Amino acid sequence: MRIGVVEDDPASRRLLVDYVARYEAEHGLACQVTCFNDGRGLLDGLGLGFDLLLLDIQMPGLDGFTAAERVRQVDRDVVIVFITNTPRYALHGYEVDALSYLLKPVPYFALARELTRSLERMARRADDYIVISAGPDLVRLATRDIVYLESVKHRLIVHTLERQHSTVGPLKAMEATLAERGFFRSNSCYLVNLRHVTAVQQSSCVMTTGQSLVVSRPRKKDFLIALTDYLGAGRPT
Image (tube, rainbow, N blue to C red):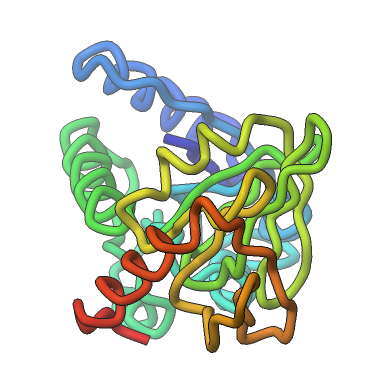
């Protein structure tokens, strides 16, 4: 679990980091914790792809609530837990879909409860996202936004509705990861999201973005079966 701790007070920040380490030891969980002194630092570090933000509200410069609003513009799914000195901010948490808020001084068992709840929420969403390493950054991609994946030499190009992401790894491994999520291998180079197939021609499939991708002859029959099964399953669009 990738956790961002955003807290301007060094003692409070250290306490939260220590609590996470204790939770790791007690639950056999691996966490990657990154600390920020203020909301501006958090926004600069969003490319790290956080699963959970422990976010202080009252900070100089960019406060926690404003930072959370900015975060929600680009990431609707990261779990946010506010840390605050006063409960009067609690209602604002609903505006940015915060999981909860914790009052300072934060007791360990209160934070442990929120870490467990965060894991449960992440588990419910796990099938809808993949995380890839794109250069120095970790990028979380919604599977519904992936049009297709392309193998180019030793790299994978992930084509989404918005842009392309380049990562390293075999297409076969990604095929296994996405097999139950409506993806099918149309040939040796392409892994296609069946959600985005609008037509199948003699030796290709047409995607919602207009690309025409080759469907190899040996795979065409199975590709058509998979597409028919997918459409017949009534998957959400």
